[in-house]
Image 1 (cartoon, rainbow, N blue to C red):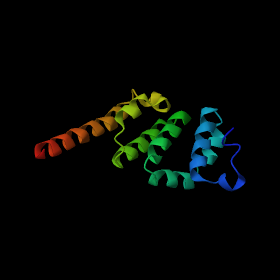
Image 2 (tube, rainbow, N blue to C red):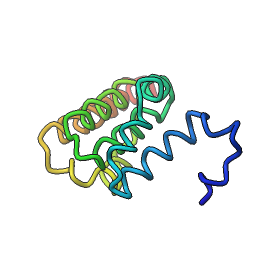
Image 3 (tube, rainbow, N blue to C red):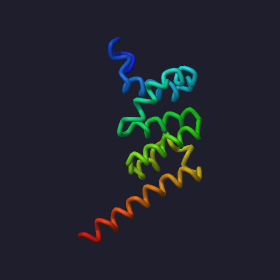
Length: 123
């Protein structure tokens, strides 16, 4: 309802469109969701701090595991170290047992350990 109440001028706002695409995917309106998540919206997601993680959730809900994992990998490479969030995010539940999901989150763990060693030694 909130998305429906958006003013006409705000309906092209990338943040709102991203939420609308996810909502459509959750409602199993995959065709509409795919049209909403166009290349412009993907470009927007790619440059936002949490955009890649949001896109990963979208594609996981859509059932596109490969694309979801690509976006999750992108999120982690961009510095998103929210390992616990990724593990408990209900949108990503279908990815949790995938070996690549474990590998991506393993990279987060490794990076944290490396920072602890690097900065702990200076301590």
